[in-house]
Length: 186
Image 1: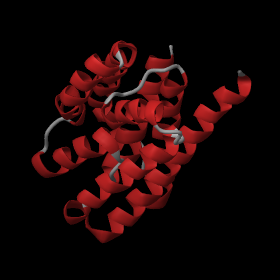
Image 2: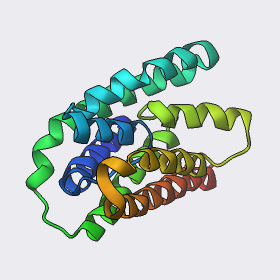
Image 3: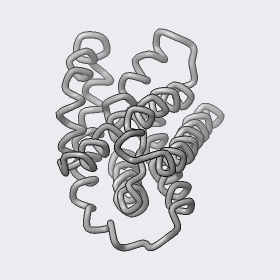
């Protein structure tokens, strides 16, 4: 259920709020969006292709994350591409879209991480790194996300870069809150 609901929230956030304003998320989703904006490639399919090296690493380092995250990657990538018809559904300002899209994507990612699965990509990398270092997974994802949107600055321009930064701030915040809430429940 966590994979389906988390993937659905990510798909709605990306297609309903980020893509209409050409905003970026971070991580593999953000790189997939950069490829979508620049080469018109499907975002979800790009995510799968870009995640292959990280899954190879997970196979050797932490097979549990490989198995749990593989389903998350496939379902979230599929739903991002299947829900692409939502791109004209919402007509909100760029600021509202950055905030709502960030919240939806962050909650979806956090929900998946809460149940030890993820969308793969840099979320999987962050999960593996938190096994080695005592860093909050949400903060680590935020740092990676910032580097990804910085790499897309030339493609989307300064204004959309700043709104994308707002997006990843909400993604990181919602991911952290969702993961911490599980720790409090235990």
